[in-house]
Length: 156
Image (cartoon, rainbow, N blue to C red; front, side):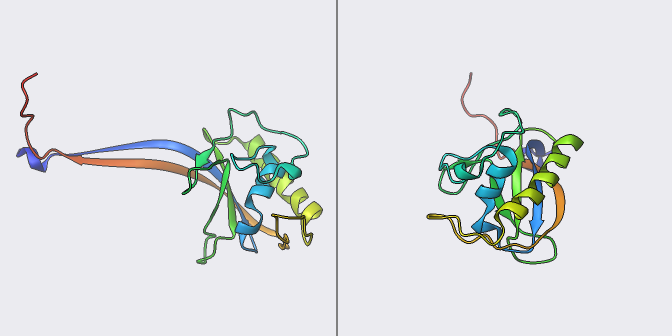
C-alpha cells in the first residue's frame, strides 16, 4: 500500500451533556439555569445568584471553554426540529446516570417555577420561557483522521 493512501481514524469521547430543550431562546438564561440546577458557574461567575444548593460533585460537571476562552459548565445548543438555540446543555465528564438526569429534570422545573417572567437585575435579562419540551443526553466526540504523506526524513 502506498504510504500516502493509509488513513487512520481515531475517535475519542471528550465529554457528555444533558440538553434541556425549551420554548425560548436559551442565550438569555442558560448560565442562570445551569447554576440553579448544578450549583456551579463558569469563570465569568454569571448565575451565582441562582445557586440554591449544589446537587452534583464538582468532578462530575465538566467546564468547557467557550469561543472567548471562558470555561463554563453549560452552553446553548440547537433544539431538534428548528434552527433555534432554545436548548441549554450541561456538560458532564462521563455519561450522566439516571439519578443525575432525574435531578436535572426536577431542577429545570423548579427553575421555571421560580424564575419565569422575572427580571433579575443587571446584567441579567427577563427570563421568558413557559415550558421545558424535552431532555436529551449528548455524547461529544473528537474524530481525528490522519493520512501519512511521506517517510520520516531524519534518522533517529
